[in-house]
Image (tube, rainbow, N blue to C red; front, side):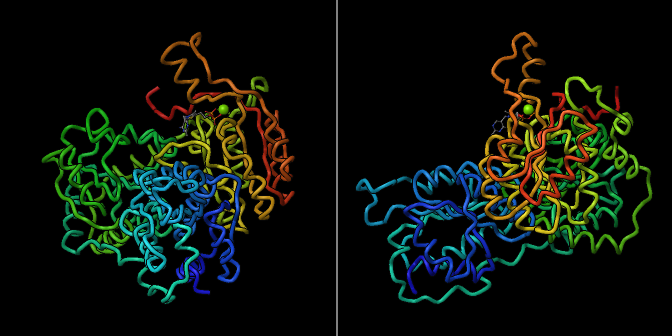
Length: 542
Ligand SMILES: Cc1ncc(C[n+]2csc(CCOP(=O)(O)OP(=O)(O)O)c2C)c(N)n1
Ligand SMILES: [Mg+2]
């Protein structure tokens, strides 16, 4: 059929999209109708924000554009907030939303809403398709924008009359309409960057989210290995204090040159100012977005030694290739910074819970790490509060999806569903606080229907501990208010939704519970009564 909805479905499949994450609604039923014939898999969920989170995790784990589909009006409005996490994590997501018919706009149409305006601040681009004839090219353009430069979410509203109309020319866009050639780093610019690194005594490379995953991460690691300039990935709202970076924050003030590679100068490094960064430290900035380079220049002035526009991944690859042809000065700096990043208190290795007040998060992580170590392609999801900080301090896996620089809690369960669909043979473990896991518990139902058996490990301290910790530090323990929760049996909720539940009160039971959870082959919740500790302190200055 040459109906607009069929063109949309066929265009997506033509672009390599196998599945969309969606929740039904009047405005998009034509696309649901078109999906089977186009061989487009509809993963239908329980909340539109979860669909966007799934598309986000799918994009980060596969490198493909993740596509979410919501209905118009309230469905769209539910989906929009989840774009913020994708935006901050530089995740190429396209949110397609149904929309009132164009010929009823301004006349009080059903669920009429200025949808593009609503999504615009959280997206790289946001618009409504103007006619049925424009559908295919607009879908291609949305995907191209999402994947290009600094990747990120794009929103496209699809008016229902355009979806229902017959399209006169059903030709699909050329394959190259779905992606633009990357902006590479010119060899002369690359040599200038490498020259700055080579001349510095204590250089550090800081990279953004696209260089901590997939092929970008491989290129970044090659660059670090060739230059022996220490490199750190930054994708946390806690900036340099991300627990995965150990005691890096202690080394940064000693740096005399920082290469920002696809990493904006922002709050995460305190805008390049002392005491986090030395007043004399110089910067080199390579970024896809000229506005980011201008912002750095405004912030640090003449301390910006060199800048160039280029996409982060290709720039890292070029730099690595050219760096391998140079000889690099030997110094102890690389080992010093690496040791700081690797720093974890030695007591953690042998730490065991007293048995009162719940299991220590380090013990939970020790048991989970054994699961992750059991598979070369294991996926770690980390979300939510102080427990998430312990997880990020203690756990490593080949693939990691966190709530990222946005710091928005609650995406663990939808992330885990998408991760299991992307890596069916891998163990997928989602670490979440008890507060955060409550946001999207209903997605256990989606996981059961889709046969996506992940394991959610809930650190249950019966409170919103991260905020409780702020209260006791800033206002005093007697003024802590509004952050208490109940020791809810989230394991029983998962079981009621058709999954598997485990309740753990003693560290000694963790291993066997995790094993049973994995063996159940159902989406599982391991609900652990933990000691509600503040996030780990990784400084060595104590
Ligand atoms: C969407 C969103 N709402 C609120 C916050 C503020 N916040 C950050 S951590 C946190 C508490 C999380 O509680 P829980 O998941 O139980 O983890 P815990 O800190 O208790 O380990 C809150 C409310 C946020 N970051 N994002
Ligand atoms: Mg909690």
